[in-house]
Image 1 (spheres, rainbow, N blue to C red):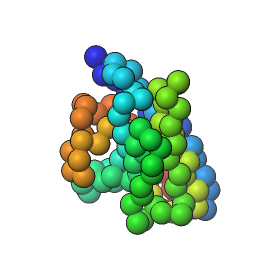
Image 2: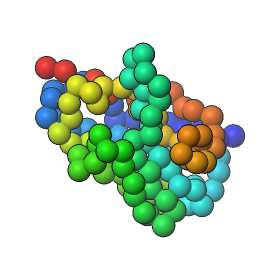
Image 3: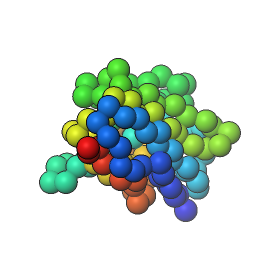
Image 4: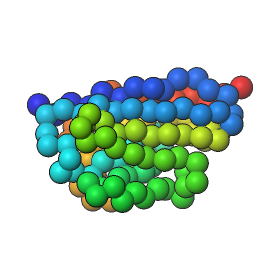
Length: 118
């Protein structure tokens, strides 16, 4: 059974930083690209960043230069380092394996809430 456990969210002031973690289980983690997604209230879920099995990374324009995605295959964990946070980054953050630009391979986990507010 595939499972994702996201953690590391919280309340942070504008300009602050957070590091999210996603522990995966139930599939051969090293074989798959991994991505971080987010969903703000009233908006569709969007892809934030991806990292391939070969560690090639890609970012949404809105986070480029501020967020860094990385992975540790031995720990079956993907990370998202978020710097220079602003209110528009407030959302529920999820990880998953991207199937293509619009769909994912597995069911979603519970996500971790990031709130940027003064």
